[in-house]
Image 1: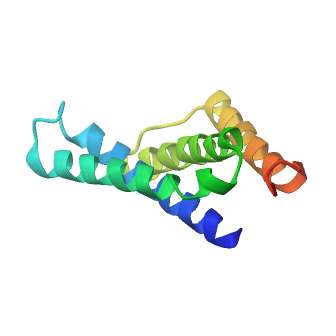
Image 2: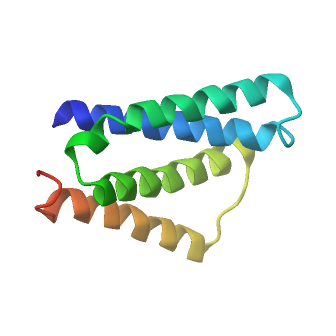
Amino acid sequence: MTKQYLLLFAAIVAEVIATTSLARSESLSRFWPTVITVVGYALAFWFLSYPIRVMPTGVVYAIWSGMGIVLISSVAWLWYGQTLDLPALLGLALILLGVIIVNVFSKTVGH
C-alpha cells in the first residue's frame, strides 16, 4: 500500500505544479507555462490511475483533492504572497484534518 500512497503523492505534486503553471499561463497563451500545465495534468492523472485501481475511488479522490487544495493554497501564499485570512486557514485545517481522519481511522482505505 505504501507504493500506492507514493503514487498518489506524486499525482498531488504534479497537479499542484500544473495548477500553479495554469495560473501563470495567461489563459494558455504563454508557451512554457502551458506546456508545464498540460504535462503536469497528464502526469497527475497517470500517477492517479495506479492507486485508484486498488483503493476506493472516493477515498483516493478525497485525499487527492484535499491535499491538493492545501498544497496549492500554501504555494500561492508562500511563493506568490496571496494572503489567507483566518477563516481560510481554519477551512484548510479542517480539510487537512479530514484527510488525516480518513487515512488513520477509516477501514475503507485498507481495502
